[in-house]
Image 1 (cartoon, rainbow over the protein chains, first blue to last red):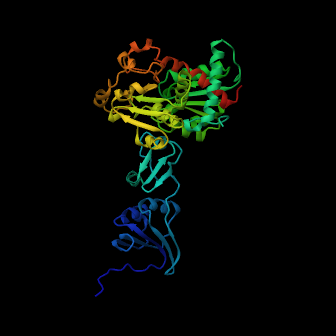
Image 2 (cartoon, one colour; image 1 turned 60 degrees about the vertical axis):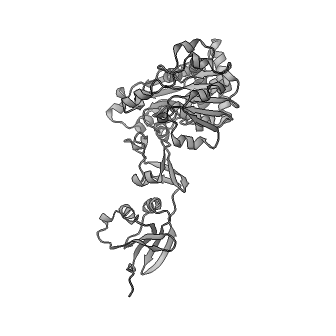
Image 3 (cartoon, rainbow over the protein chains, first blue to last red; image 1 turned 45 degrees about the vertical axis):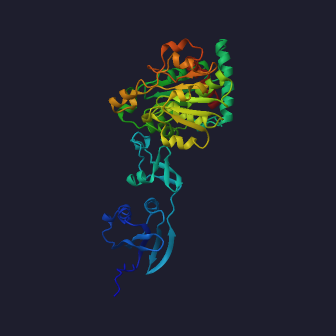
Amino acid sequence: MDTTLKISKIKDGTVIDHVPGGMAFKVLSILRVDDLNENSISIGVRVPSEQMGQKDVIKVENRYLERVEVDKISFVAPEATISIVKNYNISEKYKVRLPEKIIGFIRCINPNCISNAREPVNSEFKLISRMPISIRCEYCERSMSEREILQNL
Amino acid sequence: MLKGNSVVSISDIGKDEMLELFKLADSYSRSVEQGQRIDSLHGSIMATFFYEPSTRTRLSFESAMHRLGGSVISVSEAKSSSVAKGETLADTVRMAASYSDIIVIRHPMDGAAKLARKFSSKPIINAGDGSGQHPTQTLLDLYTIRKELSDIDGKEITMLGDLRYGRTVHSLLLALSEFDVKINLVSPPLLRVPQHILDQVQSMVKIRVTENLNDVISDSDVLYVTRIQKERFTDETEYNSVIGSYIVNSDIVSTMKKNSIVMHPLPRVNEISPEVDADPRAAYFRQAANGIPVRMALLSMILGGK
């Protein structure tokens, strides 16, 4: 008897694979699943993976990711692969990549940073290190660790 | 290139430009001493925005501009300006850029000068932003070391006191990392230099971190003392527990090298005893006076005066 639970294929949409085990929910919050009324979503949490030991997989029907969503996911799942599925076939597949410049979607951890004030600017960071992940605020020059980034995403 | 550009961080000035600036400051220093009239910035207007209290920095900027024949317009307090009506710093700066040729700004928030630069069509000089940078203080600190000890390279520099919140320390550390120096950081554990600053300099310069001034005092060429700033603490008990650490008195200074110097960005509270003032090694008032020629040189190089 086959004891494995398989996630069914999707016709059109996006597959986010190689997400670290347990991080699927963080990815779903990035995709604002509350707003995805029409899309069906399949999630595999902590499924066995040869490369990663265990991993999460997310399949979203009829939904394609925007650049900023992919950039956000790269901080949660730096090894993730994104596949765009059209009519049951993978039409495009790529690995996420941490952006060199991070504009607008991470809040600076320094409460006294001018980017947190009522000013007409986006937050702005520069990627300092990929392993471990570290970014530096272009305004106050405070650096943020991976844990701090995830809390302010 | 300083001409036409902003100085929001000490890294905006290259080492060669810094040395050129010091030579120009030497010449302005002589001119001022000799009572010569300089008119190189006649017709230029400097706007100053000091959203935080300042005596020395503000007066020396304004004096420097007047000494170069330029004019000054200023807003002294946020509550007397349009900020009180809810205007953003971005809008204030855009407006000020159309009224002046250069803008000097001090602001309580970190990174304010960088934001100002983004919205200004005229050069911005950062006169201190939050616990961020204070590049002109750094320039005059380096100028003082060079003038007093004839060189910066080869010197052992000890920084003492509030190394966590003191913005002059952060700027100075970054600048010193461009020179061949040894740096000792002496502070209580609570007031150590933030890790993100150390990360930027550690690979470039030899740094020793200690709580004990006696470990390093006799080898130091420069003892750079800072005030423990009450306004940076949210908890008064925390402030009281560290104030009074490391008071520099004559006994301490007597263990220093004969040709070493004691510096302080001022104002001091009680971290240097007044008895030290008479010692020739006490360089802090000479250091404060250097603020004029250094700022004259900076204004002149940015605005292109002769």
